Image (cartoon, rainbow, N blue to C red):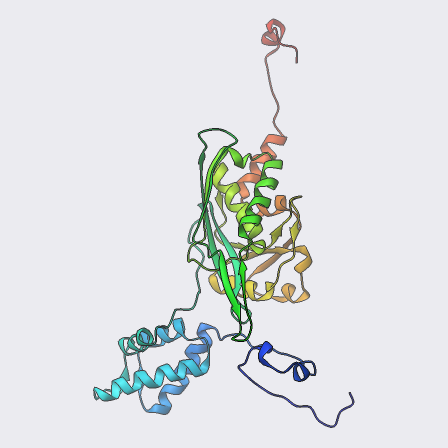
Length: 331
């Protein structure tokens, strides 16, 4: 600045595909995929212009699959063509479903929180695609090991390797989830939970790529809940990395994750203290709680754990005087 003009351009290309000289002179702004309600609004606005009607069920199908306006309208046009070939002026859900199945479309990875608290089941948060958040379930079961201290661990449902990049440059990376689990076991062992005395089964439903570090406090909460048989708050979601000293470290994509938690029906979200932003204070309908240690996370996610700790702290041993006099024990 100052400049005689400012150029605004739009493209669907990846940033890596742009010439380096052009990209270095640009401020990049990324637009998120549309939410389901926004897709439905586009569809309902377009249908009257076609002099047709559409079932609510058909709109719901498009909302479940489409992520942008162009995709929604293309689906609607093909479904309308099916209806016209059958001399109908109304678009049915079956018409849209045929389009989606023929196009081999996958539904949006949107989940809702569970209705009741459950043991070993925690709402984690992840980011996929262009800054789009999603709720990621994590479930853990624990059973006493045959030999104490030599418990086995099984991980399922996790894509341990993913490929990313462009045609000219492709990289392959492995998940760090296993390393994150080892950190969690170290922290819980120092807290006196003794996870190595149990056979643990850790499952990531859905088979999505899990980077690992950002699921640290989710894994810690799920294992703690499974071992002590204490239910986790079902309206709570969380994200954060765990260090071997029990600290909660910052992660990426927090704003998108918080939005996903809100859409899924969560009322509280735990994020690392270092990820706190002023915009979180103005968000309505959801409480954003910054945390800095795994102990804080467990106390907020498993209320009964905090109650038990308070009861243990306030415990007093009462023995009648006559029993104390005859007791061989020295207290």
